[in-house]
Every structure is written in structure tokens, then in C-alpha cells.
Length: 326
Image (cartoon, rainbow, N blue to C red):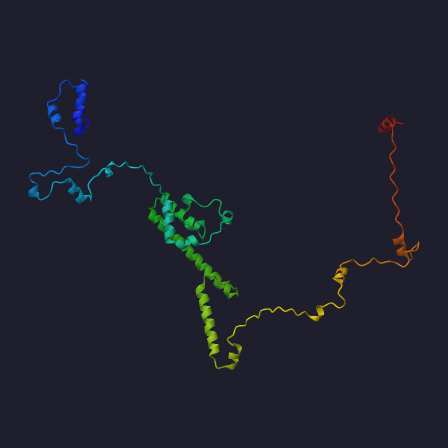
């Protein structure tokens, strides 16, 4: 049965009597009507002193109890934690390979900054790399394994070989460090051999320590020359830098660039653009030019004969021409 509020009990009984659900009023009906229950504020308890309260030396007050243990009493706006509806949350999805990758970059952060060729990766990558049970060593993917090869190898040891995740990670990282150490030693040996045979390498921009030592060495050498007693050494180094003098523009024009003669308004200059006059021979006005070559040049060109018009044929002649009959 649903628990009723004390003030609602007389009202509920009145409705039941009016509806004839209860034939006779109960015994307590008259007493409740004469002394109705008091209306109390919600979520508050009336302080009552028990007979043994003085012996235990504490007040029987609910507000003081909540203020001591919870900081403040319950109120209308107070939300109890056990009444809150639990919001559904999705289960966190985690993969072992993500844990391996996160731990690897935490141990080797500079591998993320190493330059990687993207355009050549597809072209030079092996189409069928070793996988599965046949992949027992990291060197089978190459003597310079990438980060993803190391992570996949650790995942393979954990998933297929049954090793613990920590042991699989330690084994993959150990082989990775060993192969990188071999590659570094081989690179240093190749560079030393190349320098022995006269090769010169461009200085790395990140090699700031060597650049600093070179500047310090040149500064000490310059100071030693300045403080030297040798006059020849001091004469070679005056301590002054050569400064390039700026060009000085002036309005003076060299005499050789000024044209000689009267001012023609650039007509003489423009006349040089025109083509020279054609060559003429002595007998240009005579009928026959002199000389064999001039005769050929002076001979008038003959016009080609006009094309002969095709004669018209009637139908009988056209048919005879096609069949070959006269």
C-alpha cells in the first residue's frame, strides 16, 4: 500500500465514505477531525528531546547531525546522489597496438621527428613482407626497421606467440636498438673512409657546437696576430674590414658619347633603322641589260598559258566514253 502523507489521510477517508467504499467511519475518524495532523515543511524534522538526551550529552536534532557530517541539512533543491539516474556510458575501446605505440614514442620521442620519405615508401616497399609464424626476427623486415615495423613485431609476439605484452615490447625494442646501433656504426665507418679518400661533406646546420669552436679559433688567431711583435704579420692584418664603396651617380657625361653635328631631332638615329637601297645596274633604262647574269635578271617572266577549258559532252558521248564504244 502506498504510504500517505498525514494531512492527506482524513481527506482520503472522506472520499471513501462518500463513495460508499467504507460503510462506517473508523474509530479514529472523530479524533482526527477534531485534532488534524500538523503541516510540516518538507524534508525537515521537528527537534524532540528524548528522555536520555541529557545523559548522552548530545541534542537529538537532525539538522545538527547533518550539519556536522554533511556540512548542511537537506533542502528542497538538494539532490541526493543515490537518486540520480546513472547515465549510460560506452565501454572504452582499447587495443594492444595502441598501448605499444604510446609507450614506444614515450621511450623514443625523437623517432617522431625523424624525416620519412612518403613518395618513395610505396615504390620501394616490399609487396609481400614477412608475417605470421615465419617472422621470428625484426631484421627480416630490413636492417633499418621503421617504427611501425617494430610496433607490429611486438604485436605479433603478443598475439601469435603468446608472450606477455611487456615481454613482447621489451624484445621488440631490444632488437630495434641493436639494429639501429649497427646502422650508426656502419654509417660512421663509411664516412671515415670517404674522408680518408678526400671527400668533403657539407656542414650540418644543427652542428652548432662545431661552428662555435671554429669562430672561437679564428678569433684567437686574429688576436694573436694583433698582439704579435712581427711587423710583417701585423701589416697583413690591419684590423679593418674592407667595405665596398657605394656607387656615386653624377650628371657628367663622357665626351665620346655625345654625337657630333647639328641636332636633327633623332632623325639620324631613326634613319639607321631603314633597310639600304637596292643595288641597280648601269643599263637599267635600256631594253637589254648588259652581261649574262643581268640579262637573266632583266628578262621578263612569261605568264603561264591559261588552262584549257574542258569541252562539254552530251549524254550519248558520255555513255560512249564510259563503255568504250564509238
